[in-house]
Image (cartoon, rainbow, N blue to C red; front, top):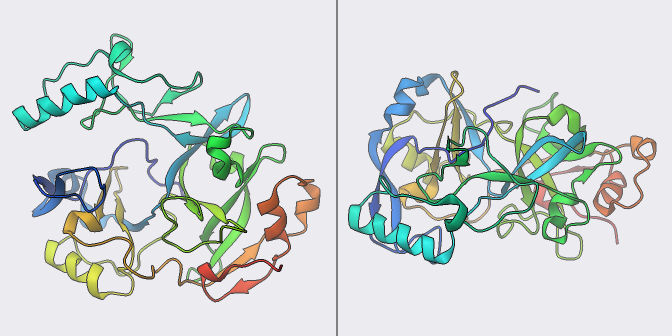
Length: 325
């Protein structure tokens, strides 16, 4: 599996952006909208965006696989956020200066506490031994997913630490049009970031599973390619998102050859998401959770067991996956 850029920080927009004072389409409580201009971001130009690989931006929650307790573990994204008082000061500064620059944080006092084993994300800057918040006033980071932590029960459903495996959705090696759900050793995913998608994540835009039988899977970032993507041109991208079958995605993430990542979200263009069916949930999928389930001695993982009963079964659409009563 080719390794793509690891998502450890907020990814910049492929276009320069501006702030409009109108209700956000993405966050109900946000009274401003970040929109794309027609000017390509210099970061994208410097990284030769025209030669980058365009991949589907998936709507879930970001995860990371790294070592914990001496073995490969799934980590959940947990940004360290400011307290209410500190956030008020930060937003007041932003509003009066139209910028977050020159704002002084006291990391020890201004930020909420995080779990004991929380770690800042890669490339978070440090000053005097303390992590420096980003332009949004957050400190991106990770927390290990313990199997008995109810807060991360849906993360836990896709991993089995005793067996050292994870449930992954990916394009089939034999046929890129076909998706497959399969078991992958966690060790093979080390230092990669992935998106957890499914029934109980972000309103389930892909229509996976049901309340009675939830379905969640991990998707490696960069693994779902966009074929024949439009050039990085504002008008052509707007048309592609609205008129193309392939454009029924939350956004695009471009993986540049130098490792730089840039993205474009539908909300940057003033377009709704979700907006009807998606290209992902309409793709055919085959389940490859085979007889090795016994070898792994999985008894307590309902999702692994349920999927093993569908081994070899092909569904015409991802959202059609269902289990026998």
